[in-house]
Every structure is written in C-alpha cells, then in structure tokens.
Length: 368
Image 1 (cartoon, rainbow, N blue to C red):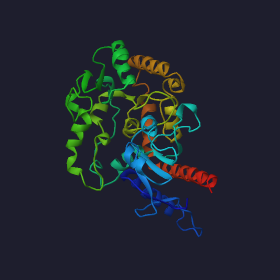
Image 2: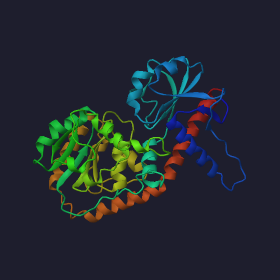
Image 3: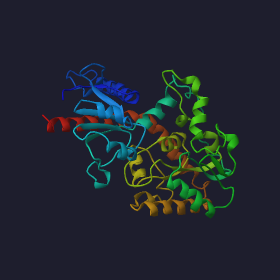
C-alpha cells in the first residue's frame, strides 16, 4: 500500500477526506518539512474502492484486496449483519462515526479490518450552524434560562428501540401527568407540543424524517443540503428544564454520538442521556462539560445495560423536585463553556486524523 492512499470515495467519505486535506496542508503551513499525506480523493484505475456498508453486492464483486467501507451515518451495530456477507479474503478499512475497542471480544467482526474513527455527525452539525452557505446559519439555536418552565423535560425520537420503549412504559407512569413532553413512534405523550414541532403527529414512527426532509427539499442539489436531523427544536427546548436524550444505542460500551447529544450541547439546554456505558465520559473527553457537578451522573459508568437504564429513570424522577433556580448560575456556566468549546472543534478533528494516520501506518508496517 503506497501513500497517499487513493480512494474512490462515497459522498460522506469525500467530505472527510476534503477536510483531511485542509488539516494536512495547514498543519504544515509555514514549515520547511514536508508532511506525508495518508489518503486522498481519486477516481482512477489505481484508486481503492469505497462502498457504503450495506452495498453487499458491490463489496462482494470488488476484486481489490483492500476495500474502504463508509459507515459514517451509523454505529457499530449496523456492521454485524452485513460484514458476515463480505468476502473474508480482503482487508477492510471501516470509516465510522462510532468508536470501539477492536480487541474487545464483544466487538468482533468476522473480517479483517482497521477502524478509522471520525465523528462525522459532530462535523455535520457544526457545519450546519457555522457556515453561511447553510440555510440554518441564521437559526435561533440558543436555549434560554428563563424560569419557570412548563415541563420538566422533553424527549424526541422516531425509530423504535427497546430503551425508548422503556421510557414510555416504565418511566412516564412514575411521573406527574403533563410534566413532560415525549414524542415517540409518531405519538405525542404528556404535554401536547405539536404546535411547536415542524412535523405533526403520525402513526408511522419513521414519518418524522420523511416529512421533515420534504420541508427542506428546496435545498437539494445545493452545496450544503438541509436534512431533518440538523433542525434545532429550540421552541420545544425552551419550555423544558432539560432534554432527556435517548441515543441511537444503549447496549454495550462503544461510542456513537449523534445529533441527539450535539444539538442540546450547542443549544445549551441541560440534559440527561440514555446511551452506552461511559458515553458521557467520552463526551467530556471531547472537551465538553456534562452535569456531574450538579447531579449524580454515576449511571454513566454502570456496565449493566438494564441497571444503567433504571438509574437514569430514577434520576428523572428526582429531577421533578430539583431546584433549577438555585442552580441556574452553574447551568448557565456549563452552557457557555460548551458553546465556547465549539470554537475549538479543529483540535478534536485533528486528533481524529492523527489517530487515523496511526492506524493506517500500523497496518502498512505490518504488511510490508
């Protein structure tokens, strides 16, 4: 394998490689030494192919011994099924927005692969609200700390997951009526917030994204297209004391942050998060603050998935009687600290690129 690696990229991989080229160029700006570029966008006979993880037929028909896999929009869990059908005589470079310990027995795949982790969702959300080429550039995205609020928390999700069903079936019956607003599986539970959302209630749990994307279809073909997950539900946030986040994954300890965590962080609304073990610790590792100095976040460390879910539910019950006004100053401090950290995202992406380079170099050195 020669460097730089030429990759015939998919759309999302191409975006990351374009950012990498900026990183590589400017990390050496004004210096005499020449840095090695590890990968680049190319479409020619010498390029390695890159396919989305679900394009089984294309992966199977590829004659190259090395294949790049685009898994930037999904976590580790989506790879288990498709990877069983990929040829075993190839080496795969998996470009993923999820990070996991590849030596952990719980996260083995039936193929030889190298993980190249990059938080694509963070990149996408940051670009949506910071680029003047994006139609959300002028959106109101700032949570207000005007108390009192109408409800204790809001929580929005569309696709059906067991941990989200747990919230509906086990947590909500423990709470006072109309002290929360939960949109789940196309239904509105608790306080009716339909007038504050861009999409009305439907029985189809996947209706939200379909309908929201219809609202943004005029941006199709533009340099930066608006998609449903980028929309900031600030009107719903602003009637809530906190956002109960139900991330895409709750089982295990891999790290797959989505827009569900990054939108509350950039808005500044306090949050409680249902996700995988040590998820909040990894968010802190990115440089953001969570709320461990204000309430108990030890649930994040709990290895048992069911118990971790129950601990979050217990915290939500306790927060019904939380004195938000007394803690307002600390909450505002965290919000502004996190907003300031958004100006330092370049260091997060740079560290990811360095890690990707190290993983490529390790593979190259072992296969000379």
